[in-house]
Amino acid sequence: MAVMSIRELKAGMPDGARLLGLDLGTKTIGLALSDVGRLVATPYGTIRRRKFTADAEDLFAVIDEQGVGGLVIGLPVEMDGSEGARCQSARQFAANLLRKRELAIAFWDERLSTAAVERLLVSEADMTRSRRAEVVDKMAAAYILQGALDAC
Image 1 (tube, rainbow, N blue to C red):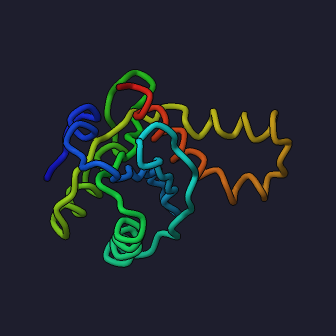
Image 2 (image 1 turned 90 degrees about the vertical axis):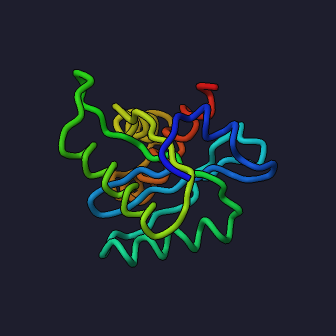
């Protein structure tokens, strides 16, 4: 497989396969899973970043365990729509994954996803800062994945 649009990704997936959303941070990778109908995104967990090979192995374990048929990777586009160093890093992460395993991957604009989740956790859930730090990455991944699911 390769990198494609979210529409192509969803259309090409086998029945019952789930999507895995990724929020790539410098210290952690937030994970979210879709249901098998690919309608609802749910926060799943985080992977503590180490070296790429270890991160990929952890990611592949989740893919295999959860019946994942494709990835939606958050693309941290700048507010003006341009792609900076963080976008290049996300694209390189995807390219490195594709060198290790054939995958279907789509990128999704994640502008303000972490900020939106932070606001929600502060205003609605009234979480402490330390508790927010524990859940924000997987919640941001769910926000990214849900946006992609809702788009088509």
